[in-house]
Image (cartoon, rainbow over the protein chains, first blue to last red):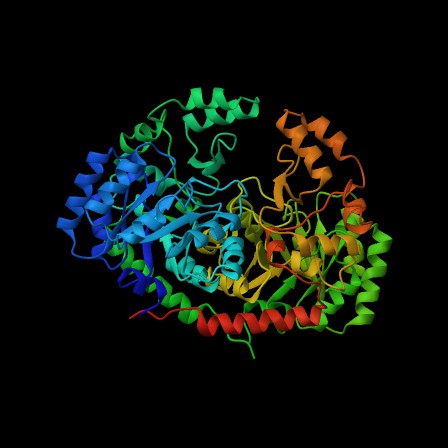
Amino acid sequence: MKNRITTLFNIRYPIIQAGMIWCSGWELASAVSNAGGLGLIGAGSMQPEVLQQHIRKCKAATDKPFGVNVPLLYFQTDEVIEILVNEKVPVVFTSAGNPAKYTAYLKSKGIKVVHVIANLKFALKAVEAGVDAIVAEGFEAGGHNGIEETTTMTLIPMIREMVHIPLIAAGGIASGEQMLAAFALGADGVQIGSLFASSIESSAHLAFNQAIVEAGDGSTSLMLKKVVPVRLLKNPFFTKVQKAEQSGATVDELKELLGKGRAKKGMFEGDLVEGELEIGQAASIIHEMKPVQEIFNTLISGYLKARRNQLPEFD
Amino acid sequence: MKNRITTLFNIRYPIIQAGMIWCSGWELASAVSNAGGLGLIGAGSMQPEVLQQHIRKCKAATDKPFGVNVPLLYFQTDEVIEILVNEKVPVVFTSAGNPAKYTAYLKSKGIKVVHVIANLKFALKAVEAGVDAIVAEGFEAGGHNGIEETTTMTLIPMIREMVHIPLIAAGGIASGEQMLAAFALGADGVQIGSLFASSIESSAHLAFNQAIVEAGDGSTSLMLKKVVPVRLLKNPFFTKVQKAEQSGATVDELKELLGKGRAKKGMFEGDLVEGELEIGQAASIIHEMKPVQEIFNTLISGYLKARRNQLPEFD
């Protein structure tokens, strides 16, 4: 099977693992690439020298293409970009910032560039910046999110209508059925976060893995809309933020409450009480921690079964 | 083409028109039924005697099955239910209330009963009450909405996993591609609101039709979460509500601001400044007012085209 995404990245399946802070180091990224998808190292939670080590370990663990996700809202992005160029990382995903900043430079070095957006305005900006593909991420996705709150079901057709470069759907995808739905909506590939965050190879703390597997209907909510919208798993820290927001806390008060290192504390150190736990709505259909290869097998067989059985033909 | 939904309602296509206040009278419902779907009269904005007239006119305008949607949060539901039974309405959709209240009674009169839910808890309650099918409505839907904010992409597989009776997906469906996605997710049928609200046969005021057609990315938002969550088109009235909410208005203050007759003023009388305009995110991909028959043609041809071309086969 070949399509625009498998051809662009030279991979077997049009399945990309989201570059998530505290979950996606070299072990997860290389496992995904070895299984035939595109693994991404999440640079957002790494100091530049740590990132460099992860890239080198990833190269040692796979001879398949992989990438790095760089959230442009963090510091040291110039330094990070230089590392990616020097290490000849084949693919870079940028997010949470201006796609015009590094796209031309990275492409001049032979690197494929993809930008993550959550609305039409930024999709058009990314196309103008010359990216090779776009990730359109719906409201149901975990972590940082758009202010328009447009869901995957609406976002993908809306972007597809106006954007003709390869399009990757993200948000709410954790099964073969949801993957099939993303293609039906007009996507050329899918980006999957929560499901890989829950995997054996995820660098998340086991307590966080467990919390993902136990999450159900209504277990997450989009919070901190005044600061930067982020979808969180409901826990005691979440409740504190919610109370502060409901009583009209200012941006500064919310930032004070958030403090430093909350995400690390929650997702990497496993503090389910005081930590910030970023996860998507799709956690509600994840019931088991699995190795990446098994996740791929389930995704592909679920996709094929749904494609065969669930789509009525009309006369 | 036959599936569980076409068989249940004895219709040609598994496409149900949402019973919307101020938009779906007998003209819309009969047009949808004549086109091969299931048209619903929206009882929520009708006095009992007005509803009775609409049912009679609908019967005169079509010999196909049709239904009535009854939001259980309104008054006079006992009286409304008696009219449905006396008029031998073939299908009743109930929403916004307890499915146990009327299901057994309606079924004892030979009426098919469907209940609308937005979370797993109420889906299971509806099954227990003995309904014939469930509508699962995602966060992107217009009008009243669930507090969990679960999107269609996540909600349908989550409900499908636990519920084995026929399942109808709602929220974010306004094209053949989105319809195909809903089937991929595990739905047996779709319920479509915004697209039919924008149709020629809709009883919405022309100014509201026009506003739907002009809506784009980020044009709607889920508001009034403290009272009852409702997705609204952004207009000056919306801004008033938003400001009140951001400054911490109480439930009573919000109810006072809402007042009486806001929805009628907006959707039926066309006051785009002071009226409440209920519409879904899918409005962003609706660009033209069309007659119902043309909407059906476009839905079916879009579905078949997407089914043929957009779903890669994997090896």
